[in-house]
Image (cartoon, rainbow, N blue to C red; front, side, top):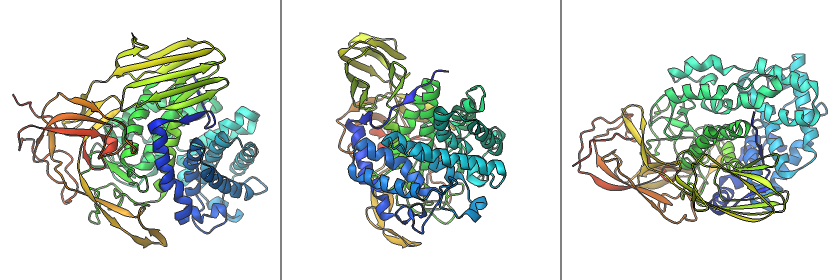
Length: 605
């Protein structure tokens, strides 16, 4: 099987708009969570008395690569302080989680799986040679406890067993010891087999079940890719088969799935949990590296450039727990929320709306995407996503200047003291591709690069198209960007204290109250794309880097009963209430309030 390897944060650095996006993240919640949030600041993981399970490992999983990618010494020091405290608390038998020995059998060992994965990320970024031995002791202890029957997989660990393989594969490459394969089999045997859940995905029942839990499912998509080799099993592309079912019955316009905690069907007013977005991104990054199949990289782009920025405030001090494709307001609803199992505040922007898992976990999205821009295999380097970056790999320096996905152009400047093969993945939707001014058929550009200086100029076009969605609705897409009708809004802040956690500006709760019309339908099938400079806030609603002019008509869309701030799943009527008018649609990721899936009316003559 074709397989690519990731670069480390020492070899690959973000540039341009991507670096600015990471800087905003560091200046916002991710970079300050250890100062303001008790569950991280005072966690049992570092000797405190607050949550001692998933929140610190979740946060470090994104905070560590963020710190090292930006080469921010203060953030690196903060990460090291947490890692040092965690390592110092490792027990003699290898156990590392903050749980008394007598309570281990009651402790959901999802935390063991997660901290192992996080320590592997830390090793990749820091090169800290303490980590391999620490991981060896953690997972050998995990194996021993599972083999003896002292513990078993239950709860989240049972449904996320495959996450252990991120660290376990790393150990196998170093040590090749038989117990590692035995642990792999134990995890698979005690873990949940999601093939048993497929039927339950087809008719969402809106019941809280782990087999339909959206984050479990997003993680699961990479399970075969990470586990089949240690298990000695063939790769069957199981993730594609499962994804097809998920998309058919729960899909969204950005190739994610509805899941306001659990799978929620085909409905643009259902929510999608932020944790699932970043975990699905990571699964696709792993799947593309493992298989080399471009479909995973293309789906990754749709999630990264649409769903991820849309659910974060522009300053990244707040986030939603769930986002909606058609989101006309973010205001607290009545007690009976419009979601499957989430509460009435789940779509507000805040510090910890609904549950705090996303507060800790969203940090991994942008940094891990940045680390997926280039991959390598032997003497071949691949640009997998056209993100502005600088790569330094054993005498080769590649600088990629790019405004992608907002501008469909990329310029590579290469200085090398050795020969290598260079590949550039070109998205399947690229039209009129040219490489250094010469026409190219598309697909993957491959060339031999010799020692010296080389420049490569890549340009292509994208054609805006209406993508058919269920229930007679359509979404406008051009390249990897979806476009939405932006809804202007006023922000209403609420500062308060809940369970000893203070919410104050800029990380209090914010309601977004609409101030402009949203009841639109497409009135024509011709669109005009305009590109502007990328501002200091790349996904800005006020200054979007690209717009699509469209003829839109107002209709009687109606509200979802009994809510006053949620539109219907489908319009009440598609009879036009107005003549066609030109509206500037903006990227989905720029619009915090938006209409994305809309009907297409017969064009006016």
